[in-house]
Image (cartoon, rainbow, N blue to C red; front, side, top):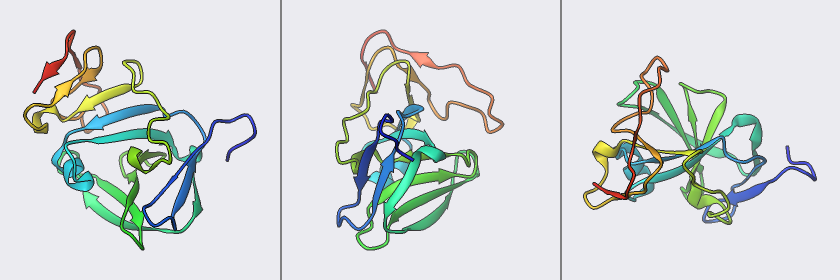
Amino acid sequence: MATENSPHHDGGCLCGRFRYRTTAEPMRVTICYCLFCQKATGSSHFIEPIFERAHFEILTGAPKEYIHRSEGSGKQVMVNFCADCGTKIFLGFERWPDIVGVYAGTYDDPSWFEIRADNAKHIFLDSAKAGTIIPPGINTYRQHATENDGTPLAPTVYSNPHII
C-alpha cells in the first residue's frame, strides 16, 4: 500500500478498465528473450521489473488468468491480463509465489525505473533474435539464471556491446 513517502507508479491496460500500482523500486529487472516471452509480448524480448507481491496492488478491474507450464522449469506461470481488451499486465509464478513480474510497457511511464548492472539480467540469450545487441556490464545467461532447485548459475558479463 502506498504511503505519502513511498514511491508509487501506476499502470494499466489499453482500455483503461484494469489499473494497478507498484509501491517500491523493483527488486530486479529481467530482460528475457525466451520464446514464451516473445510470444507473450509480440516482440523480441520482455522487460520485466520484479516486485514483492506486497508492493503490487490492483486499483480497478479484475484480471483474467491464463496458466502456462514453463518448458524450462516445468512450473506454472500465471499470465494475468485484462478480461476486456486482453492486455497482459503481470505474471505470477509457482516457483516464486511471493513475487510479481510486471509487463513494463503497461506502466503509464514505462521508463520510470532504471536498468543497471546492479539490478538487471538478460536471460535466454540462446533464443534471442539474430542482431540483438546486449549491453556491456550486465549479467547474462544462455538460459535461466538458476537451476530448477534455485542454485545460481554463473553469468557471462560482456565488456563491450555483444551482438547475438
